[in-house]
Amino acid sequence: MEIQNLNQTLKKIKEENYAILHININNLEWAKFVLLATKEANLDIILGASPSAIKYMGGYKTVVNLVNGLIQDLEIKTNVILHLDHGNYNDCINAINAGFKSIMYDGSKEDFETNILNTKKIVNIAKKMDITVEAEVGRIGLDISKNKSLDIQKTNIEDAKKLANTGIDLLAVAIGNIHGQYESNWKGLDFELLDKLNQEIKIPLVLHGASGIKEDDIKKAIKLGIKKINFNTELQIANAKALNDFLKNNNFLENKNYNPRILYANSNQAIYKCTLDLLNKYGKKN
Image 1 (tube, rainbow, N blue to C red):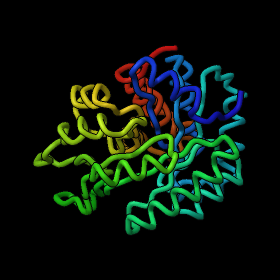
Image 2 (tube, rainbow, N blue to C red):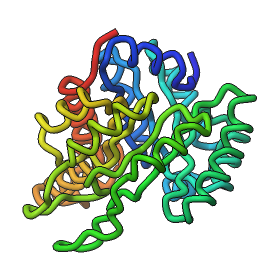
Image 3 (tube, one colour):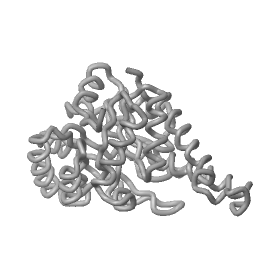
């Protein structure tokens, strides 16, 4: 096995009306323990890598080779999709050239016409190489402080239709969701808008920023057309809490606790457990 595109999984998703999980990876341990959880659950998975995470890990080729190596060494039998998350035009080209089989062009910060133009260019290149493409319309919010989120621009239905007609495979929608932590005064997902988008847009819809949304609301969103669900913050928090607990309860200079294999053991298990919990809640067994 090696990294796949989303075509086969998307066909199954549309026929059987469920969703696939997208888990962002940030290093070797992240990728390894997400894949181990995937193996336990016997589910297809999307490993998302943002441009900043790719840079942190060494580069596009490094990430492709890392994931392919883990698939083989861990003997993963289900489909693993390595997906560029929130890439600009150049990021998408770099990912394609390195061997990514699935990409997201995020033109949400561009004017709409530029978003359309660049999406068409990316689709034209990707389809020749059997690569699946996700795009975004509207703007998903960004949590920038304890009490404030910025830039939520809910998806316009007519704009969504135009972007869907570029030939993309999936469409990320802005329905009140944000990247980061949700505050207690968050107004929730706009299910009325999601329902309308699902009726008008005939391709799978994507929910970014799922970390922290209530389980019932995510399951309701799946019924209303969400077919790809992105998680990142939830795993980052679980990882940080586990590391903090270890450091609070252990002197890192004793018993070779400074050894990364010991220091990160609890964090790695937290990543595994969090992933497995999410897969069991929202995934579908093959």
